[in-house]
Every structure is written in C-alpha cells, then in structure tokens.
Length: 182
Image 1 (cartoon, helix red, strand yellow):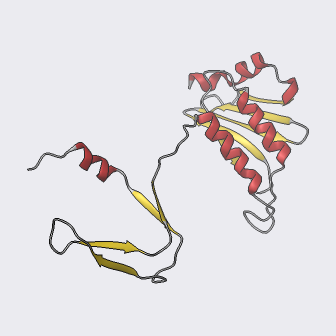
Image 2 (cartoon, one colour):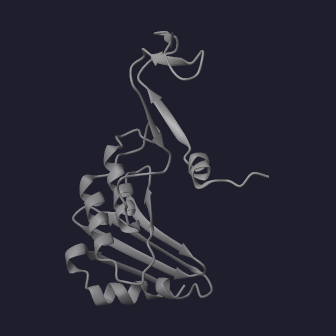
Image 3 (cartoon, rainbow, N blue to C red):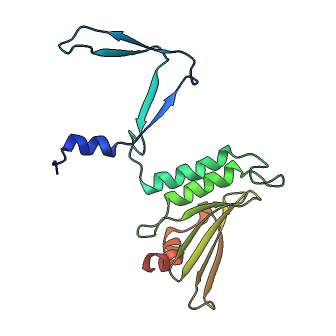
C-alpha cells in the first residue's frame, strides 16, 4: 500500500462547494491544443463567468460561544410576523437587545444557555443540564423573569423578576449557581 502524503490528506479533507454565477449549458467550454513537452496536450479554456469555490466550515473569523449565542439572538431581528404560522409574531428588538445584554453579564462558570423564540414573539434563554432546568424570559421595558427547577427536588423552585438594570450581579450568580454545579 502506498503511503499517503500530507498534500493528499489535505486535498481529501478540504470538501468544497461551488457557487457558480451561471446556469447549465449557457456558454460552452472550448478546448485548445497548446505547445508543451507532451504530445497532444490540451488546455481547457472556460468561457463561463467565474465560479467561486470555498471550503465548507472554514471562516476567516473565530467566534466564541458567547459571540455565536448573540448572533443567534440577533438573527431573530430578521423574522417578521407570520414567521412560524399566520398567527405568529415577530420578536421586539427591545427584548432581543435585553437578552443580548443579559448574556454579557452572565457570571463566570455558568454554562451558555440556548436561545428560544416562541410564536408569540417572546424571546428567552434556557438551560437543560442534568437535573437542572432554568429559563429566562425577556419582556418589554428591559424586564426579565428567571425560573429554575431541580428535577430531584421540585419543591424548591426559584422564580424571580427584575429589570436588567436592577439585577444585582451577586444575586444573579447565586440564582444560577446550580447550573455551574450541574
């Protein structure tokens, strides 16, 4: 068996997608004979517009989990009424911005939540880690509510409401502490 070279490995690993700016069979490809050290060599001249090829999954930028979470939340801004069904509502920019600001003040050690959007336009974040479930819902006026439950001990549920500007960092850390331990 022939040993594989690094170049062959790289070529095999870089899966690419083509994004042509042309339709099928719009312009022909011409073949032309050229002079070379090999008899009968041909060169293919592509008369079609440029085709861009880019590897899948590669980017010029590196994003943190926090950046990706905030990008997901910002993507909700592009949704309009009717995004899920004819009765669904778009999220308010104010509640999306409150959610992004909340992500910015998450205490260290707290895992990243997942974003959620209901068909009523309500923006939220949630965690579902082991026995712990928590969610934060964002409302108009920079208001938010935090709900946390330990599935093993459902008698000890936490529910608090704040405005983002009145949310003490120490209290937020205390409320979300079970997530860090989960």
